[in-house]
Length: 283
Image 1 (cartoon, rainbow, N blue to C red):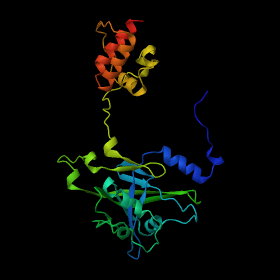
Image 2: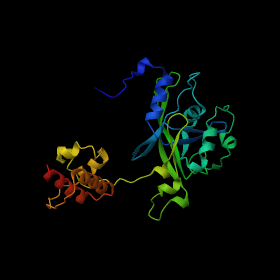
Image 3: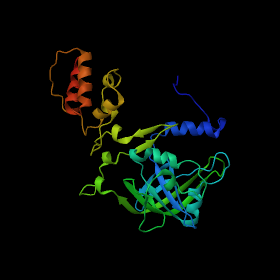
Image 4: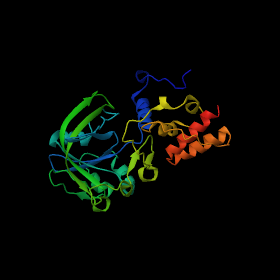
């Protein structure tokens, strides 16, 4: 029997679907989008339906939804339709509350930079400004806008090409690599929740070879209650199953499984496999 709740989207309201989406597509990067209309008025607003979509050319996309109440487009969308330009500033923990403040539904002639107390960083190639307090800013030109429904709450996928990066000196190394922890970015989650990327950051070393896969792990090991998916994946990531060194260990099976788990958690995968062999021999 399945342990999932099955929910059909067409049997729910837009708001109910939205709440499930933002809680489960999480955490999401935040595009802090700067635009300027044809009258020279600046606008700044955050969007968490945002990501990158290729590097040649460098493409980013975000989706401002039509108002859930009125069905009208937001100022960001209107301005980009007019001018075909925008900036995206990434959001660090230090400006999180100012970013949230800028998301208020101010009138279209109100400058959210001023309301949120953020500084305008002039662009080099386009007219809209970025956020000077942000560690990284993209200058972008519009590639396409894809309407996704045309109803209240419907998205409008804006695709843009990055023309230039602005990267703070304090976060970039001599080789051009960004120090991700020092950026201290945040991610949007559901409801009023956010994730602190620096605190939750961890590293996975991707194999440079094709792993042997789960099917190479003995069933007794895969079906045990002592090892979890992440640990088993480390066993499955080796290029080939190691040779059994026929080591002897008088520990009971539970102790061997616990020791195997510890080895895997510390990335001592070869020795974890040797413990696997010991467990199998004890059958």
